[in-house]
Structure formats: structure tokens, C-alpha cells
Length: 233
Image 1 (cartoon, rainbow, N blue to C red):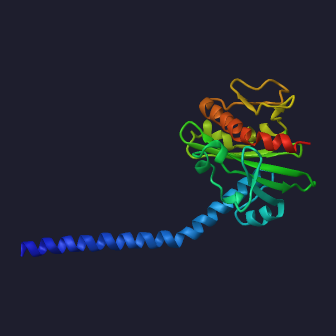
Image 2: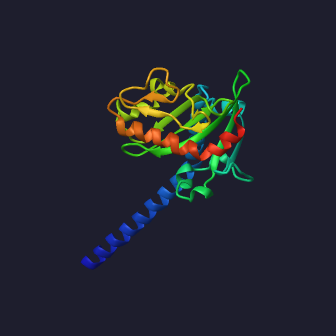
Image 3: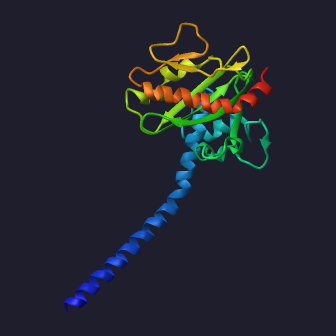
């Protein structure tokens, strides 16, 4: 009788584990399209934010289609790749490749005033985990039109300030080049020098995140240096 009871418990346990596994798998499959849609919408909202176009989940797709006119993928030699969807490129995966083999997405938008803006995605590392963002450049491909940054787990009130308007707005009109040489933007602890076209203030108490963001901007955009130099006006 005891053996029968033990067998029953074992069979019941196995059936329950299998049933729960199947249920979880079905739930994941059913939720996957919604999750993918949410990721798409969030990405489009971030791209729009980098060109200073506010959006919400309800209108992000419509606004993206209105402003973003073209996207393509290049390599560090500014060679375009046919048949590669820039929107689906994952920078984290690309960074694991050799530099010469990485896909570098470019998004081209047209602002309300008719200016053409080019948007470049970035991926880096903060204090506690990944940080990422988008930088849009004006027609001269040297001056920043706008940025948006985000993070996975930076400290609230410190490193997490990278995705606040006061921090991001400092990048507007900063220059990536000096006398034709790529210099990127420095995030300066203690404060940028007044009027310096290549410096912004670091986050007080968020030095490691600030320097991680500085590195992300430099390392991400220098990969596009040849493309920027060839197409600058």
C-alpha cells in the first residue's frame, strides 16, 4: 500500500511538472507577439526622442513612419549592406563580433523644418549594468541635434540621471569634431568649461556611470567616423 502511495505521488508530481511546463511554454508563445510589439514601440519612441519628437505608445509607430524616412546598415568603412534591416540589428550582439564584421545601423529622419537628421544607436556599460541610447546629428554630421539615454539598473538619483532632460539637453549643439578630427563629447566631473563645444557636466555622485556613458558615445560613434567624414557638409 505504501509503495502504491509513493508511486502515485511520483506520477502525480511528474504530471504536474509537465503540465506546468507546457502551460508556461504556451503562455510565453501567446505573449511573445505582444512583447515584441512593446520592444518595437519602445525603440521607436527612443529614436523619436533623439530627434526631439515627443511620443507615446499610442502614436509612436505613426510618428516614426512620419519622421524616419530611411534606414540602412554600414560597416566601419562606410560600406552599405543590402538586405539587412537596420531596425532589427542588436548592438549587444554586434559588439561580440570583430570590428570589421559589425553591422552599424543608421536611421535618417526629416525634421519639421526640413532638415535631415541622422540617428545612431549606442550601447555601453554603466556602473551596475548595460546603458544605451541614440544620438542624432544635424546635416553637417558633426553637431548633435539630440540624444536619448537609458539604463537597466543605475542608482536612482545618481547614475540613473542619464535619462533625464537636464542631463540629455546638455548634448544639444555639441560638436564631435575639432579641426576635422573626431573628438567626441567629454563628460566632465566638476563641470564642463563654459562655452566648450565638446564638454558636458558629469552627474554629481555618478562618476562611473558618467564615464561609462562618455566611453559609450566615443566608442559607438567613432565606428561611424569614415561615414561621417565622407558625408559631412
